[in-house]
Length: 325
Image (cartoon, rainbow, N blue to C red; front, side, top):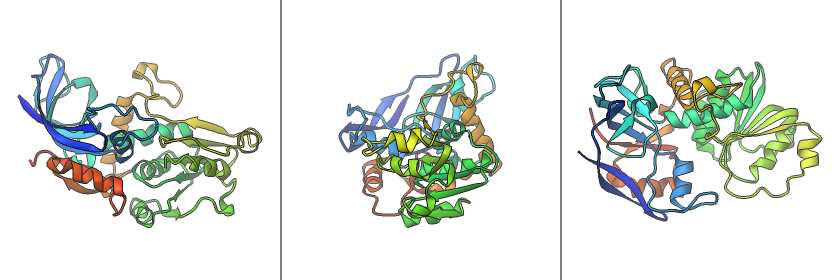
């Protein structure tokens, strides 16, 4: 069975390629993709060989999609042909996957919105590691997709207030549409020094780490959720970390419980976090749809990646549409 997938074949260049898809095995499912959402931070970094990326090609981008099961293996339980599911998968039109790595979603959830589930899951593990307590004052630096979702999830975790910071006006406007009513342009203002119990750095900009260290209260927590591309200069660890008694927490999404039986403290498995995101979406406690600025045809992949990279327009996320039901 033939399918199409997006390939990054050299730095900054992508194309649509044909590939062969095998039938599902005993514990696998065959999925026809409806939508897959671009993760602009990770995908653009890897595509353009930014710092802390391998720069190896070909590279097949994508890790967040929604599709419908076409066929299930004889050993699959709990999933059947016709079910809507989300999955960590590259941008492709059809694929075979381990059934245990797919999460069923209710039909009432828009498949396009659900296709961005993995970005929300990334933000969720950062919020878990932040250990937010009821009533905490939380700041989120950067209101791109990960920061916006971290702010939304901060409320779910019990924050008393969440303030989002971003230099880009349209991102602040979009954040307010998502329920993040407190937004500011610049966290460097002295009025924000030592104000917040938790500061979540979601920009990936090295110097923003210094801002986060200034903004957090003594004994507070700074969570490094964005993947920082480069070195942070000028950190005074005595003044900014040691004397303030703060905790600095690395929140890369790879560090999770491998299995639910291994969970401890705030660590949960990928599956548990993804199921939680679907539950929150179904309850409308978080929203993803406003973050998806437009649909893109897979044939136009180069154009949409270039537009995301240029940052010349109010474009937050884009979803490839692979099939119209």
